[in-house]
Length: 228
View 1 (cartoon, rainbow, N blue to C red):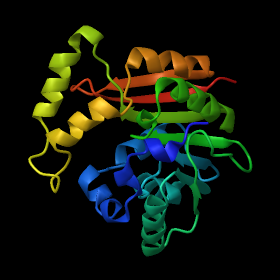
View 2: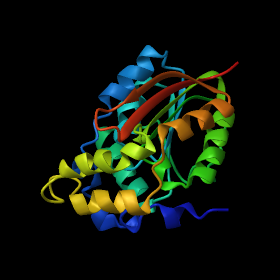
View 3: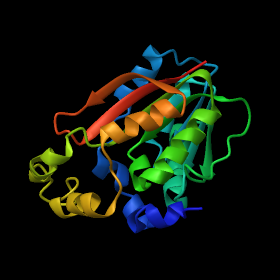
């Protein structure tokens, strides 16, 4: 079995780095929460957040559902999440230190599975297995929302698209992701093409309802429904 901690990036396991991660990432979960409400999220639902990080999404969605399971391979991320939950007075978020390939869902099938900027840590073989596991934990008609660095350009357009993305990098790591950090992502992490991810979703029994590709052609968001 793949060791997901080894693929998570050492910085995500470092408490000193994690402390400023959400600020640097500029995570705003409001659009994703709005999307889930449009797809039927209600107060009785169970939501599983895979790659939960510091909990920006988990804490935003918690008041709107019965149970949130926040899953991450990083103990440092989960410690930050717990601190944030206590500070916000949120009591229905459970933290589980596992990954896409090792999380075992407990209880009734999930109504929603959500993942933001985490699946790209896995090579494609393992992505496909992870998506199969996600589909298995969802109830029929359940929702999977995937937001990630997924390339919507064709291979022959990779160089100009990546160069344009790198050109928009932050001037310093205090302000966001620098060019050096983005280059490291392209070189060492496992973002893949949309035309490879989409068959993985479909073969797992997930119907793609919407697919949105950012103007940069680097970020994509999928809203999927598990077939009944």
